[in-house]
Every structure is written in C-alpha cells, then in structure tokens.
Image 1 (cartoon, rainbow, N blue to C red):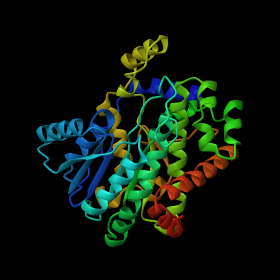
Image 2: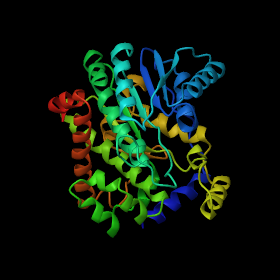
Image 3: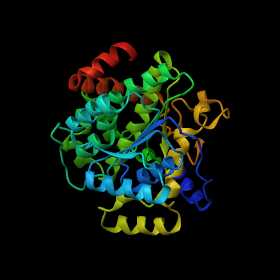
Amino acid sequence: MDRLALYFAIFKQIKSLPPVLQADLTGKVVLVTGANTGLGFEAARHFARMNPQKLILACRSEEKGNQAVRKIERDTGYTKAETWLLDLNRFASVQAFADRYEKEGGGRLDILVENAAISSAQTYEKTEDGYMKTIQVNALAPSLHTFLLLPHMIRTAQEHPETNPRIVVVSSGMHHFSMLPTEVGRKISEQPNFIEALSSLEYFKQIPVADHYSDTKLLNMFFARALQSKLSKSCPSIVVDSVDPGYCISDLRRSLSGPGAWLLLLLDRLFAYSTEEGSRNLVHAALVGNRATIGPSEDEGQFKGAYLSTQKISDVSSFASSGAGLRLQAKFWDEMVEIATNKDERVAKLATTHF
C-alpha cells in the first residue's frame, strides 16, 4: 500500500508546483549542505535572492563549491555566499566544520538544510569511521553535523526572540521502500547495536542495493521527529521538519546502470521535477509558517516534526507511524546520540542539557 501511494504521488507530479516561497532573510544566516550541485545548489540560489546576512554552501569539493558561489553571484547579484568544506565520509571533517563555525560563524544560525546525500553504492564500502558509506553520508554524519551546530541555533533563538530557527532534514518519498519493516529488516532492528547491524556486510548482501538509500531516508525522518520531540521541551522556538523533494532529475542517479536505470530515465522524462522545481520544496520547508521570515501566516507549531511533501504536511509510511516504527525511531535516536557523544564532547554537553 505504501508503494502504491508513492507511485500515485509521482504521477501527480504532472501538475506543476507553486512558485518558490519568498521571504526577507536580511540579517539571517543560512547553511545548506551538498550545495554545489542539484537540489542543494538550486535551494541556495533561491535563498541568495532573499538577501541573507550570510549564505554558507557546505561542499565536499572546494573547487566545485567556489564555482557554485560564482554562479550564484552571476545569477543573483548576491555577494555574501561562502564555500565551507564538509566531507560526510569523515566524522573528523564534520567536527572540523563545527570548529570553524565556532570561530567564524558569528554565533548565529537561522536556517540549516541538511541536504547532502549519495545514492546507494553498488559495492560494499566502509568509511574510516567504520560504517557503511551510504549509511554514514546520508544519516549518521548529517545527524552529527546537526548536533554540533545546534548550540548556535539555540543561541540564535535565545538572543533573537523574534526569530524561530529552522532545521530541514531532506528525506524522501523513497522511505516508503525501506526494507526495515520486512522480515530481514526486523532482524536487523532487533540487534543490540542496530546501527552497526545496519552497516554490516551481511545486511548489505540481503537486500537490493537501492533499498539502502531508502533505509537512510527513513532514518532522516526518524531523526527529525526525535530531535523535535527533545527541543520542544528545552528550546520550543526551534522547528525541525523533514521534506520529500519529490521525484526529481538528480545527480544521485548518475552512477546507476542496468534495466532499472532505463526505467528511471523514462520516469525522468515523463514525471520528474527539474532540480529547480524540487528545490522549491526544500525552501518551502525552511520558510513555511515562520513568522520571522514571511510574517504571520500558518500556525508554525503544526510543522514541528512534520514530514512535508508537495508543500503540504503529508503522511509518513505506515511503518513509520506504527508502534514498531516509533520504537525503532527511539532506538536509532539513542544509538545516534551515543555515537555522537563518544565522538565529540560537545555533543555530550548538549545531550545533558537538551536531550
């Protein structure tokens, strides 16, 4: 049923999206990961037209990031975009990014869009940190990145009560295809160390390669909901949501081959949003209901922990809303906090105060 709902959603994409949501971001600091190409770049370009105080493009390649900055300058006339290096393959790079932010970020962060991701690797690869590459880049490292930047968003909320910082975690409708609700996935979920089991060679071999990506998109949505539940008590002005960009023409599929790639090419031609259209969903998730950027409109509270698709609050998969899904969400959260705490003492301090 979940998959049928997703296919129906793709077919509905024949209808065009509304124009990009506009806001005045004067004085605000915006950070987008994976911003040198694709959805991240298009979202950054939209934000640039809204004149933020600073726009940070977090990219793995300095050269490609600088090219993106120059293109934004040419297209929009905005001159305050910056390239910051961030390689999610390495937790050390995430920590170095946080170190730099403490020194150069100015203590403020209003909008954080955790967009960077890769498609499922065709072969099993582990990072230097010991996790499957797809799992680390798409889920674990973005979570650590959010944890390490969160103190700046909390400070922003405290020092600027007129603003409501927003964290956008880019998920996907592909979370409906996660294998975690299946018998194979349940065995992984029941392991004492869920994340370690999820990253194992054994699990990699047990499911279709592409479904590892779907697993990470479910974890993204889990993380957003869990983080919001913690912050709603300790820092209620911060809003965390997750967003489905829609089925888009994407660089993520550049490494795919075989019969499935031909099917995706056909879907691209018939239904896919352009990357610019898909990026409107990211911008919408960052701005909708925010009285500090677009003025009084919809009740911002309804977007706390929400999953957005086609610019509406949407239903998550039946597993994600089930008791089993909520238990796995709590397990993933606890393990992610433990990993991050062991990796960086700043997260330990954050967890003591806010988690």
